[in-house]
Amino acid sequence: MEGLDRILSEQPFFNGLPAELRTLVAGCARNHRFDAGQYLFHEGEAADEFFFIRHGKVALEIVAPGKAPIVFSTLGEGEIVGASWLVPPYRWTFDARAMELVRAIGVDAACLRGKCEADHHLGYEMMKRFAPILVKRLQDTRLQILDVYGRR
Amino acid sequence: MPAIEAAAADPFLPELYRVVSVRRELADTATLEIVPASGERPSFAPGQFNMLYVFGVGEVAISMSGDCADRSRFVHTVRNVGAVSGAIAALEAGAVIGVRGSFGAGWPVAAAEGSDVVIVAGGLGLAPLRPAIYHLLANRARYGRVTILFGARSPQDMLYRSELEAWRRNLDVDVEVTVDHADPDWRGNVGVVTKLIPRAAFDPRETFAFVCGPEVMMRYASSALVDAGVAAGRVFLSMERNMKCAIGLCGHCQFGPSFVCKDGPVMALEKIASILTVREV
Image (tube, rainbow over all chains, first blue to last red):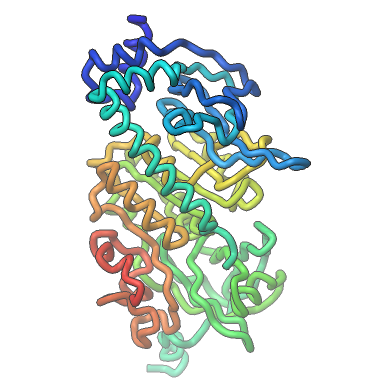
């Protein structure tokens, strides 16, 4: 766990977070390795774990029947895969595929939610860190929807 | 003054140019190389534009997209978005058009010497930046880190794809490309071009940023650059307005207190930030 704590401390997400709170998160964490083409999770599955990417690139996809999946975002080193674990019903709304070898730290969502309930200081710190990510992704999505490069 | 000299000095009088090659870049976009019917083409600076005139159709402002150092020709990449640009994009080799130019203020490539340079291009916005990229690459030792961030609609809509790949192979230039959406065969980034800015390696205190693309994209990109620590005085945008006379007389391209054709098209963010989001401007 000491190793995981150290690895998490290198993630930008944890900048400025007191070490004791980071250690609480590390208690819910484990190492992952995904080969190229392997899925981190699929749409509809329980969002019971989210991931900090240490190495590699992950594609977020949506599948329509009879069509090739549409990749709507890629995430890389230092970024977080998954926010559906934060809000009920805790289900993934897209697929996440490793585009190349991906090394990641997975955090058990139920474990972390439980610790956030028990320690609201930790919960607030987590929300303060996740909210800007969610807002940024919402803004990025808005810009994508505008299709600014399309013919108008 | 002899009549012929007076005519040559008249900024409203187009010179004749012949189209010597046409490259169909995308379904609606073509790159034309044009040479003067006589003499040498005028010099130009990266970021400047010409007024291209299709006889019987009309005239439109198009940025240079070729190399300033090649004095034999102008290169223009044109997208079919209207009657005149459509007519230009449909031209074939051998056609003759009128050209007035070059006009406007370009990218501050001299002021950026000694600094890192971040190029942020979206869609066809790569075209007005290409002369600046040629200049940076030709004078590579004069600059710090050079980063090119390019966003396109999809992998099929990428402008200058082979050239981007060549620049990427260049070891002292960082090139990152992203598309708004892709199929699973695409190995690159997916997402808006602004996402690439926080990931790029540059020293924001010593960086000049050149941004060109749809205005909404430029607003978001310039915000991301300022958020990353780049001074607004060092973020430059190539503005697009309804340019007609190209010399600041007619007022069609008025942008607040400035004329885009004369004071731009390249303008510093710090000078235009307050009016960028004003709908009436």
